[in-house]
Length: 626
Image (spheres, rainbow, N blue to C red):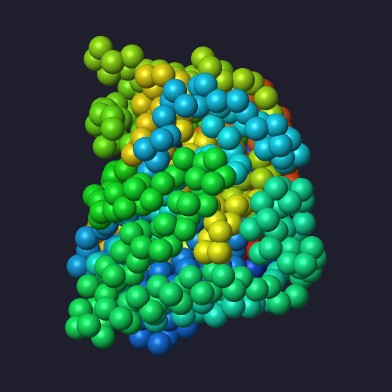
């Protein structure tokens, strides 16, 4: 509670300095101070972690330990980040598997920032007409219903929504361009963990909850419940096929090095072995035999590139996000809108503060749902990120009333196609969201930042033959609305929710942050970022603080349903916050801190060179410093 009192005192001092010294002003100050103190009366569970050389925050203690081992052995932040990706794909399979996605942002010591998509493309057979004409699989529909999901035309489970695996190419490209070590060096921890590792309670529970789904796919049953027995916490969990797949990739690199190829050429050999060799062929043959759409030719045609990230300026900070194939620009648009308000004067997490953030997010999400899509297929309006456009959007916010409308922007003759016209209203299960993604954030003293949002191929997953690789389900993030920018098309990337974040301060490294949470990722990251840059919270306080979540959007998953104007508030917020937001017209609901769909991790560099890290304890995230 000491840190909370310190934060409250700091805010109170700021309020004292901003108020006039007359009697009525003092009475107003006293009320503001009382309210702010009450808002800050929540218990901080963990101390912030600090280091001088490096800091990392990731999804589990195991992944964090792997990251630190690589750093302490002489690898750079990218080497460590790739090792963390591979280790997480093996041990965090409830959230993320080897066949999933991993969007990356990397800041190098020279100050440049790079984006790697890390998301696969739709197979050539994945067309709109196919899904509009297909009959749904009743078994998979039942499995979805048992998990509070309702599938759309594109199923949420099985091999039908499988894209080309994107994480592997993202890891190899990052390692090749920005790392220093060999693939074998960064993959060895993952291979050892796949061979066997003690399973934790979260992963054990995810297998138990997979239930009858595993029986539909014998390859999955053999991995997750060998001999019909589901592993219990503390049991040694073995993924021997996956271990062999990883080691076969190591052997491909070794053979290339032995033949005289350079480090970079040998990593290319690993990539060819995965995407144009026996692994691609076996996965494609398995998917085809199961009735799915992914083929070997889709693998062979796939190759990621280093991309330029999106960026905006906010009070001297530069915030970087991946391109419009993610929802990352929602954060940038919201910041542009909020830049016109004195957020510090509103006070952290006051009803007024939350109202303005929520209304800005509603406008940004309306644009996301109407305009965002793969820029290789559609022309996304560049004006979405302009300060002038943000000013026009800001003018739509009523400080005294919550909007219940979806209000996407218009650009010339182009009319927005907002999917709310096709979406059903129904409750969206929120507690499931943080179980479908993880996060990795790293900062080192040389100024390198690494941020990742690994996801996909989560439980319950289909294991592809004898490769041991679980397949992604990400195809269901496409829409089946003809003419919409995010409509499903062959070779296209779906507009996904995964979005790492990097922040610099006048060009110098400042922060890396990411979170699971599906549609609420940008909402959680906005709150963490503002807590850090406006209210000077340390990394742990920023990620652990009570958060809100607006559901005023169209879901990126399943049947793309919606819950307009629903606002979830953390139970740790005082009652007057609930009451006043309800009075403004928000449909307020209470949720437990442990039921939040987000679970952020963050690292932050201080002016004196110290690097601090924070990890959300409510989802068992873990940070370390060195």
